[in-house]
Structures are given as C-alpha cells and as structure tokens.
Image 1 (cartoon, helix red, strand yellow):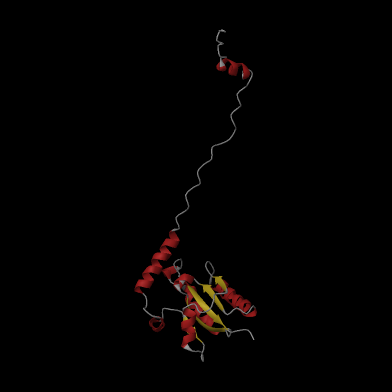
Image 2 (cartoon, rainbow, N blue to C red; image 1 turned 120 degrees about the vertical axis):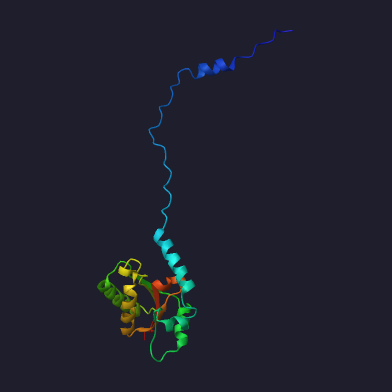
Length: 182
C-alpha cells in the first residue's frame, strides 16, 4: 500500500499567492449626510385652520352668503341666478388663473385688467383670480378682495363672479365667468 499523501496546506499557498499585494488607500470621500426633513408649512396650516373655522361658522347656503354680503358675488343684469349657482358649483372648467399675492393695489389693478383682456382674446370662459384672505394685511383685512369686486363689476367682459369653492381657494379666490368671444 502506498503511503498516504499529505494534503497541501491551502493557507500557505494563499499567503504565497498574495505576498506582494499592497492594501488599497482609503477613498477620499465624505460620508453622505441625510437629507434635512421637509419644512413644516406653518402658513398653510394656519390657512387650513382659518378655512375650517370659516366653513363651520360661515353661511349655510349660497343665498345666505349673498344676503350676508360676505361672499364676493355678481351677476350681470339679464342673466339667470342659475348661472351664478352653476359657476359656484364648478359647471365650467377653470381655464386660466391669476394670483395677486404680494401685489399692492395699483399692481393688482393693472394685472387684473391685463389678465381679463388676455383671457377674453383667447376665448376663455371661466377663470380664477386669487386675491388672498388678507392675513398679511393691516388689521388682517382682505384689501384686494373688496377692490377686486369693483374692478370686476366695471369690466364688460365679466358676466358673473363668485367666491371660489374650497378646492379652488375658498374665500381667498373668485371664479369669473367671461362673455363668450364672438
């Protein structure tokens, strides 16, 4: 019987194979930082709370709101009150909008006039104008809201307007129905 052969020392073979290997220098990288948490939208939360309080304490129906004088609403003579109800309920798709936040009275007046003129030329029927709730104004009064009522009533292309539904800005915006382009 032949003598049993001793198995090779695998550990010794491995050490010989990697004898001249040098360690890799550490990478010159900085560890990744975690992304900062998203900011908490404090103003949005205040607006939502104010909107909730407004809906809980506000008028019950469109007619009640119109009688109280709190809601911006206008209907050109000769048009049915049904037109105003349809506008309030979203019968027409909002085709364009203008945001007056951050503007003073003069800037807002010019912006509204130019916006309505452009919309009339483009054949827009229903538009939204965001005037804000006046939370940043002195005495927290919606200055542009009251001015906007007068500006819109003077425009021939405006057939009707009303306070926007909550999904479109609530008491901080109006929906405007424009005369169809002929």
